[in-house]
Amino acid sequence: MLKINQLIMALAFVGGSAVAQASEGSSTFGGVTYGNTSDKISKSNGINRNLNAPHADHIIHKNSTWGVRLGQQNADSRYYATYDNASASHNGLKLRQENLLGSYDLFSPIGASTKLFGGATLGVTKLSQESSGMSRDTGMGYAAGLQAGVLQQVAQNASVELGYRYLRSNASVEVAPHHAAKVGSLKLDSSAQTYLAANYNF
Image (tube, rainbow, N blue to C red; front, top):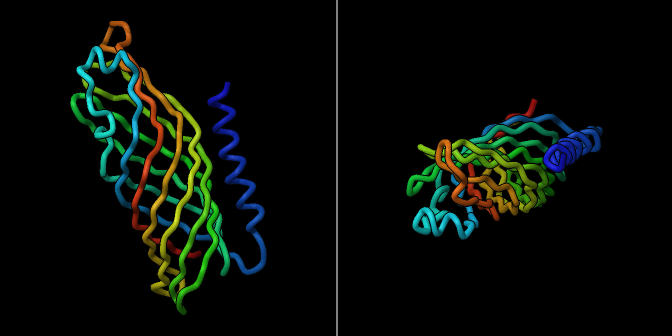
């Protein structure tokens, strides 16, 4: 029930933001993102004992991430929803991280076509354990954090941006060989993402 409530809370945030932003002078935009993500992962004592203390922070470490976004913006700010996905493996452990996020940014112009942006994000993270020889497991948790970057207008309806986002989370998964008891668990504490985005205003 808690996981469902977290998802509803995130979707309500995104929906409420879109309604609030639907005012005169605003426009709808969509875009794609690409960058890299690094995670901080906590290991249970069982993981260290049974799997020879693997370096869990290296499972998703500067690995490719991609995403899509949709939102509204005006001259001063923007609201948008983002889905992004990253996965990688290390020392026999494979994790996939999926984020569904609602974000709000304020703009600060530094030129005729260039703006700095900064804002906050709230949503949910789904963590999946997909290691070979292990039973698949998934867990959901909150995602909350901040982002900042620079937005460059390149045409009347098109822009590109370079951004950085930091998120805290509590999503966790269990690790268990097929048809055997679990050997421990992994918990996502935080993630950092550097990304490029291309946006188009409708």
